[in-house]
Amino acid sequence: MLGLGKGLTVKRCLTFATGLVECLCFAGAVFGWASLVFVLKTEGFFSSLCVNTTGVNATQVLDCRGQDEQFSLVFTIASFMNNFLMLPNGFLFDRFGTTVARILGICLYTLGSLMLAFSTAVFSNLLFPAISLLAVGGILFLMTNMQVANMFGARRSTIITLYNGAFDSSSALFLVIKLLYEAGVSLLASFLFLCACSVLHLLRTFFLLPRKHIPYPLPDEYTYGITCGKSKTLSSEQTKDNGNAQKTREEMLQNTDDPVKQEKSFRECLMSRLFVLHLLWLSVMQLRHYLFIGTLNPVLQRLTEGEPSLVSRYINAFAITQLCGVLCAPWNGLIFDRHKGKPRAAGESEQEADLHASILSLFLTALQCVLFSVCAATPYLPLQYLTFILQVLNRSFLFGGNAAFLSVAFPSCHFGKLFSLVLALSAVFSVLQYPLFALVNGPLGGDPLYVNVGLVLLSLLAFIHPLSVLLHCRSLASQRAISASS
Image 1 (cartoon, rainbow, N blue to C red):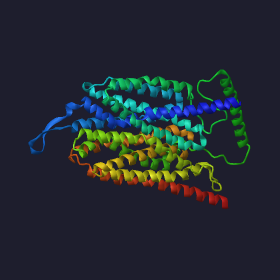
Image 2 (cartoon, rainbow, N blue to C red; image 1 turned 30 degrees about the horizontal axis):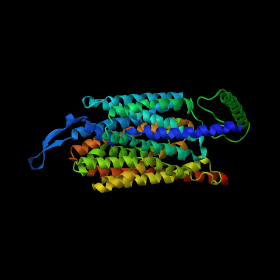
Image 3 (cartoon, rainbow, N blue to C red; image 1 turned 90 degrees about the horizontal axis):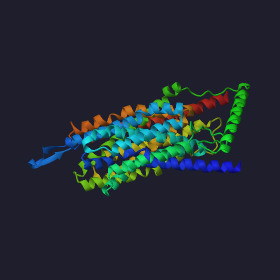
């Protein structure tokens, strides 16, 4: 039994480590879009939309606003599909389990990589399905990996945020492809290599992840994946024993006069004020990030007056800062988990303590977004280095905090559905990035000042959510006090 326990510990650590690498190297590659756009422009994608116009002093200049709009539209559709298709994918994951969801994700990711490998300037429109498939496949990797946190109960929120941070950092993959391209490696070779990596994803699926789900709380000596006959038999016996023990506990509860706390239904979670305001919190900040990523290349073109080497330097700086997402995200998880092991207030449940701990995280995330928006709205080129740092810090807090909050505020049996639904609904809001870009590019003549000021004001709405959670926690504390006194 001691040997078995040690083997399980090693396997769980291996599952955690390989999952982190998978999220870090593959899952969120689409958010490194600015680096890939630089390469695609060099390759001449959508170059037919560039037209000669008369500039200052009657000089002929090349106007590529049409090309920039197409690239912005590609990213808008991909980011929308990335989140919106999480709705059916979340239900698929909850209904059929890990293996089915991951095989779907691997197929989509491989197909997207193949389409990018064989796309050319002549078939520029192939970017629309290719980037979307890459995005949807990547988010499925993240969703199926986050359940690994259930095996590390005391640090569950920290690991969830760490995985989300790795997802953010994986946007540096397109920087690697950009640097390889500049060193002479073709896009065909780079994306064919990504296709070949699908074999590694399949091996993890069958050997290091469960066929269904990882439960929380975790049963004793829980096993998963393809194991030897001895472990498999033991697992079956333990499953039977655990089932009998659960049945006994249920019978004991039925024979007592103590009220049993009923879990909220999915509908009750959906209609709650916490969920609605959390959706607003995520949607507002996600729109700001998507618009920033989708328009970074033309904004830098404007601030550098079209100097290619300077644009490339800032694009590289932005992509390098994205690597720090995996380092920033655990800070948010530690904020969620900081009360673990400390004595709770009389009558306070662990879920209430988790919820109370989330207030600081939600507030700091909203504050970071406001600061990031102010820097992004300031047309001063050197300041963009600070903008990049604030952006990656805020983004790692945003998406890690989103998953962590949903895991502590609502029953775990609804996590897959709620996580996918909140991303799907926020995706509808994020579609505004394209009309906003078209507004700047058209009627505003390329000057984003008014849109940026509007986005700074919009980001202030995110502060409503932490205030609402604070009021909710105080209401729960008041109810406990009344119950204790009666």
